[in-house]
Length: 255
Ligand SMILES: [Zn+2]
Ligand SMILES: [Zn+2]
Image (cartoon, rainbow, N blue to C red; front, side, top):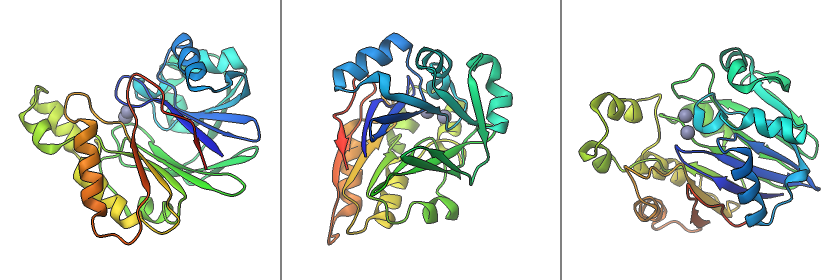
């Protein structure tokens, strides 16, 4: 399995997952042209795309889903509730609906959808399993539930939200209601919350963690990385850590 984040953050998300020359993306908040520019810059073959899977219906995850699916004749997968809410925004596509808890069989890769805690109708995070390895795609959640914790055990790699530094958020420019929203149980994980989850999920088989959905206003990659390193301090084993950015793709990670 190989994967690449083409963009990560509140201005557009897209996670490419590929195995046996078949690819799916989780979310797409990029325009079609931006998707193509970044995919080619990363060294991906956009023509391998077969599936576009949606975690929740916020614009930064959804705005490019319809155009991308139509361009590559890809199947769109959304929960029934999200599809009801967002059908106008997605437009005419080949749609398959799922329920949280379902396992989506996408050929060589399967995705398990786990209910998440976020301010949309039916938010989920995903665990992708290939023939040999597993990857968690965990962003846009305000609280770590038992379900999430259990669902993310024993992964080989993890894309994990390190959204904000609490101090920066509180002293930053966001209006009060938005600060409350981001901090709330249906908002986003702070560096500390993400670090705590990372410490719990760390195990000898966890090879790689990509810090994701890092706020450009309320966080920096350095603060996020410092929180991850602090969380793993003293651990017997430790994954490679990388931070994903908003404006350029990551490298292609091979698992
Ligand atoms: Zn988001
Ligand atoms: Zn969101």
